[in-house]
Image 1: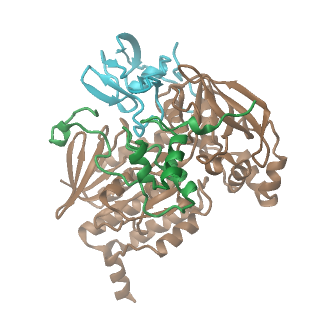
Image 2: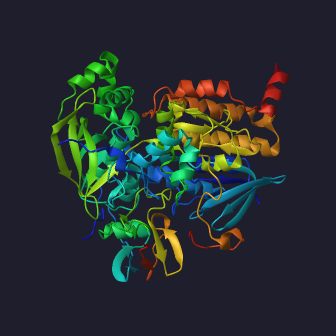
Image 3: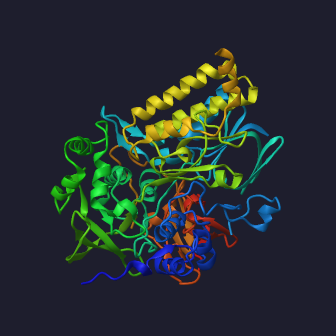
Amino acid sequence: MVVKSDDNKIICRCEEVSLGTIKDIVHHFHCSSREVKLRTRAGMGYCGGRICRTIIEKVVQDINNEKVSNESQLSYRPPIRPVTFGQLGGSENDDES
Amino acid sequence: MSDLLIIGAGPAGLSAAIAAAEEGLSVTVIDEFPKAGGRLLGQLHQEPNGEWWNGIQKGEQLSQRAHQLGVTIQCEVSVYDISQSKNGWEVYTTRGEYKAEKLLLATGATESPIPVKGWTLPGVMTIGAAQIMGNVHRVKPGNSCIIIGANVLSMAIANELKLCGVNVKEIIIPKADITSNEAGNPEQVLSSLMRLTHLAPTPILRQLGKIGKMVHPKIAIRLFPKKGIRMFDIPLRLKTAALEIVGDRFATGVRTVNIKANGEIDHTSEKVVDADFVCIAGGLTPLSELASIIGCSFKYIPELGGHVPVHNEQMQTNIPGLYVAGNITGIESAKVAMAQGRVAGLAIAADITNDWEQMETSINKAIENVNITRDKALIQFHPGISDARKKFYQKSEVNLTQISKIKKREA
Amino acid sequence: MTMRVECHPVLGNLENQRRITIYYDDQAYQAYEGDTIASAMMAEGVKTLRYHEVSGKGRGVYCNIGHCFECRVCVNEEKIVRACLTPVSEGMRIHSLS
């Protein structure tokens, strides 16, 4: 039995973005990991890209034949944990939605 | 307002808290997890002298000592943003705002993923997740498991799961592709296992280390038996690759295939091995998101596990008043993290009292202890840590102005 | 079915655990005081904690230390929390998200 392509495996668990989608975007637009994120929502889900960011960067660097840079393309932005408007307004003990 | 706020109540954070409190600082430690101890909590392995390293006990000892010194430890607190003002730091959390003059990030590491087809199924978790479930919560995620990813961490935790009564059916590697890096290459996996030192925590790992001195991994992987070798009675199969995690509503097994030393797949060998749960072991990488939002400079150092905030040997970052310690500075053992924590705690005390001269001897002694601990480490997560550190600190862009001033004057 | 590691050759035996009752999707489950929601449900053999909001596929504990947010659940019909970081309490009512 021939092994099917791995392209339909999920890379970004939060937004269910597949490896194939990410590869297609990089090939088509010759773009950075940041642009991949904006175009596919990979790394933009609930976890803030904590889980999949290194994989997205790896795939982009491999396809574009780049070396890993010191300053990561997918920098973190606050809030780095989901917060409520209540918390942003200063109230305590609120939930994480 | 505290003198020092520490984010992360693991080995580095608690050790820093103790060192700083011993110097008279008021210290608060916060952590997301319900229990203090961080990564220590799951650890359980035998030292070469036969004694058990019980991470839960170590964590409790550190917490107790910190409490005795008047350190405030608050768990279930999640940080979502940080800002710096003239007076120090403001840290925004799910339990309100914390203020402190100095800030130490001791947030540890996060597990690197290995995306395998089917890895979102319930019953698939990181190897660290299974470790915490078994050793800390005392719950087995299932009766049998398969581990995808062969490295020092996965082998150590495989044994811990076995002690919890889990039937660990095999440790295999992911199928090589653009996402799997070296983890999917049998020769490179064996090569990294063979670099282990004579101090490795188990006889079989020590054995691999010895072989590594005599045989090239290229030859060794050709000789590596197809059915694997047994370690703690658990099959380590470097010539078996995971194609897919199978299951309808939850994971019920892994579709595997035999591969040759060069990674070539033998399609006729494809089969499904049943398991109650599946662990993904992709190794660790520094968790530096807080350093990132603060605006630290970063350096990519593969030997340290990825991107680390630029810092010097006194654990100061390039942002004044911001310190780092533990796995956020590079992946190493808990003992190294504890030693680093002590350096950070002392350096912060010197920073606050502005009395570097008084503290210089003890800080240098603590730095020396980090180096000794590093050289004696049982497990080197990546090869070449010591050299990479030395190079990094020599070139460090962080100037410890006060200390260099003292040194100049002495010279 | 319980998946508790009651006896452990190095860590010793679990003794005098206080049992409490929690409700997950309106069904009662036994938990131990000190459990997180994630460990309590796993001890009872419940692996699926939520359903993906778009695909509807089940998700469970992945990282167990709060990094991945896969195990988020609704508690007492108001708070969304990570099951792996949230201790259980007597009578806690937990609902899966979808």
